[in-house]
Image (cartoon, rainbow, N blue to C red; front, side, top):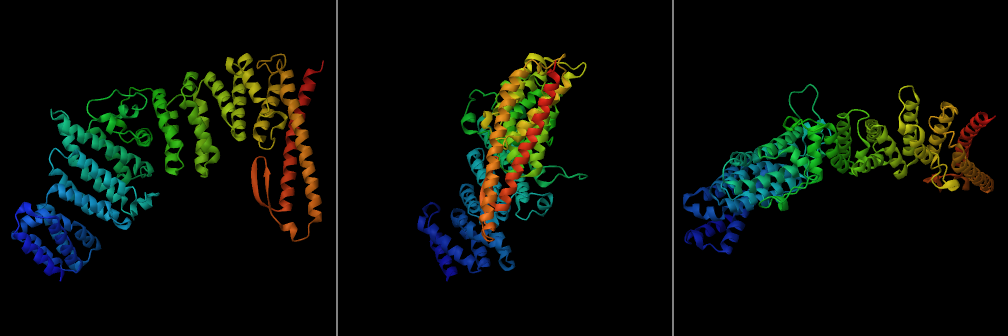
Length: 590
């Protein structure tokens, strides 16, 4: 039935001039052709399409068969596959490139999730042929094609391990390899035309290729594992794809330094529509920086004239973007880029003035967030190591200012305690012979000491929540009283002792009394309630807040244990406080 309808449509259209086909002719041809293919009449359709008498009809209407042909080819049914491939090839040869372009992109865009990779791999070469037939006026069509393909590729899961990358179950790696082959002739055209006078067409095409590179760096490259395989001469597929993207950037005349400095040095508007049309996504540029400075892909094309400090400075904006992400792959890359950028600089070399640049304080805050809130253990550990590396790179004045700023802005007691330990280490170093400096001794140190030796909210400070900070402060004070003899007083601690006793130790005593009284009353109340409860009630659960943290599903017995643990913490603080007071008493005795 469908085959008869197709023959009828063909006979009627043979009598119509080439430019006289109506919309209903296209619809009837498409419906009859699709029905024939779906009914398995693939050999008959091939005969009709390749018949020389039907050449003009196929030239005008054949692209309407792309959908059903692609669908059957993807099924890979032996009896119809070869017929459909031959038909598809013929349609691609004779039809208008503009109509083919629309039809091919439609098939790629409408591909089922399970068939995205196969569809792209099947149609990229025909799509390339159609675009090349458009001549010099193809920049916008090329941009539309690349955008469509990348949007579809972005739906494919990115391999997480090298084993997954090798298996390539979802076809992402194959798509990336095919995509590089797809863009090569267009890159070559731009490369050849860069020195010719036909600037406009090549510039438009260059911009579309630049957009493609930027989008590819954002996804899938940024999401991928890009390390080299040890003892392997070949790069993994996605690392190879990343390297090829950087090659394309070079071929189309893009300078890596200019790209990376784009957001720091705002360029003046260029002729044409470069600035308004081309976007420079920060994530894509962050990926470019990661490829250059961590993976050393394309680093041979990056000038060596820039100092390590300058490289660190422009990388900070990209590190910040990566560290603000919640995705493991981006966080990991951010930490690696931060570490490598710091390792290029010498210890104790970064000047204090860098801390006046916003990102030199905001990025450590992002690092602290990773250290304290990231659910992935190894990233928290790596973040702590990078945090210490960052501290080590500043000179003594820079460390002094950094510690002060971080203590003021950090809300995490563990981080505050860690900073106080670093302050102690710097004071210890400066007290050794030949190491004295003005920033960790004498008058310059005192404001920092007063900042450390204080309670954030006076006697009402939550001692449990601020335990790490308080213990760090007490240990620092104890160290200073023992290490810095009162007759030397290099740090000025003995001169300021009366203020510290009044503004810190006395308030801490009050806070301890208040906290212990509160928890002793809670323990007494809990014990009484437990005695009154029956066996069933003693297993009931509740929610308890201790030290600012909520504990759920807490039984009465667990409740009591938590309260007793809090009392032990108060005793620990009190014992260190008592030891400090003993030292003071002995030292100040006449």
